[in-house]
Amino acid sequence: MKELIHKKVVVFLIGVLVGLSSLRTEPASGLKPYKIKSDLSNVSNLKEFADAIRYYGRDFSLTEEQRKKLVENGFVVIPSEAQQFFHIYESPHFGITPRIPNFITTDCVLHIYHLLYDFSLRAVEVEKLLPALRDLTIAMFEKSLELYERAKSSRLREACRRNVIFFGVAASLLKFEDLPLPKECASSVENELRNIREHKGRKKSSIFPFGHDYSQYKVRGHYTRSEELSRFFLAMTWYGQNAFPFTLKSESTDGNITAIQAMIMSWLLFNSEANKRRLVDLWDEIYSITSLYVGSSDDLNPHDLYGLIVEVYGENVDIDSFIDDEKLKAFLRKARNLRKPRIVTELVGLPEGVQFRFMGKRYILDSYVLQRLSKWPHRPFPRGLDVMAVLGSRRAEEILDRVFLEPDKWKDYPSIRQKLKEEFSRLDEREWYKTLFSGWLYVIKALLKEWDDRYPSFMRNVAWTDKELNTSLASWVELRHDVVLYGKPSGAEGGDGGQKIPQPKGYVEPVPEFYRRLLKLVKLNAKIL
Image 1 (cartoon, rainbow, N blue to C red):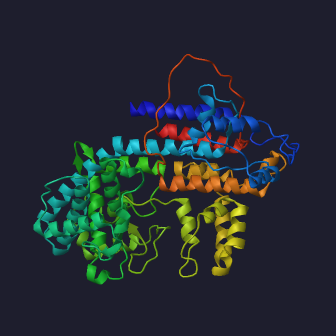
Image 2 (tube, rainbow, N blue to C red):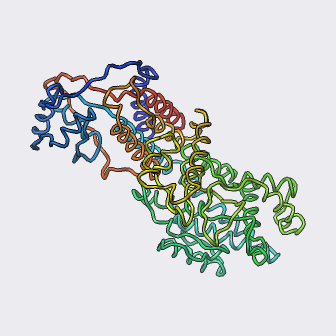
Image 3 (cartoon, rainbow, N blue to C red):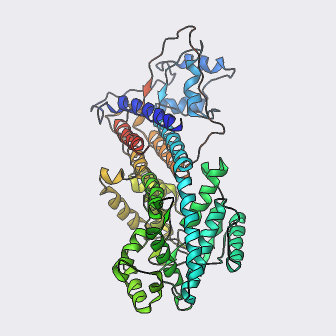
């Protein structure tokens, strides 16, 4: 049933966007400008609009400031009490209320896509990913426990013990009860679970030689909607937050245990099964779907590590050989030459350089921008406007430079921002559509241009440029947080018969390239579903 709903929503959006994107890619040149008279006598539907508002028991009249803005800019924005976009658009279309045309803006269309993205993602998480994550986690816990019980070397035994704790925490977060935890593991698991429940910032970890940011375990977004989603959130955060570095400042005392842990995890995935499925296939199922939505991790993953294990230790490796000093040194030398993460939290005490994560956080373009454009102590907090500027908004650059005076705070800021702009300008459409996340950014990018004489008069001013910048920032926030902005699921008002009301002609914001890009993104979403 849910899959049917997903498809109906996608088909609806595709149908809308096909019509919109069939317009010219760019409007015809030389559109005749117009001016609004100071007495508003050439403004259509002003009385009808006021009558429609009064129908719902509210008085309406433009203030002097609003009249002035309408004359100057060709449009005016008025606050609304509506909780959803469709509330604004539906009110003139039911019953016998006064009829006024609708102005369909990109804000509404972007918000609808946000609802589709979020709805489809959480459905996939509950129906597909959570069951796979449970199967994968309990299997990794049981296999790690088996290895721990038969390990003889103290160093190998310690690596296996930490893996039992690592997967024991994840299994507990997924509500597996009565886990057969050895006494020497149980207290560490409970300590980690307590810190996760309290989610009060950075603390020393029970199993890692560096601090851990437990504030990341505060359940948020659509993951607050159900216990299932909350469990999924906590377990995936645990897997994504914890790094297994190959370069530690304290590695002489750690004995490269974290590296051995990562090797054992990768080996287990490729050499173990659960319910007649290889564990790596379960891992791939979770990772591949989430990669299409968000992106790939820029940390090393089990595929990276297992390939290196085979290269150094051979095809038929046994984990006892992981502690062979010569082979381990050769492995670490090669591992440290693999890719380093491009997005790194720069805090004292955190591991640096090449790292492995069991299910790593994802590399996303805007996080890369925000990291590059922050610098302690000159500019510790980047702005959303940074992302818009790099995507091509001259207005965002103007506000950053002239209002917030960002170049005065950090002399390297303008040159780094310019390099990022050039880097992003070289991305072709194929690269933008590698993920739904970056495709969404590409859609927003279409709104951050200069509006010339090919566009209507109301679009050729700073006020409309600011409106589009606000639209882009708001949509970006929805993308970043993936938050559903309504309290209850929306229902459909139904019924047939009664008086037929003539439909007035509406007006759609004339940005065909925006609709073309969004149509391509929705089709990609449909393919994933």
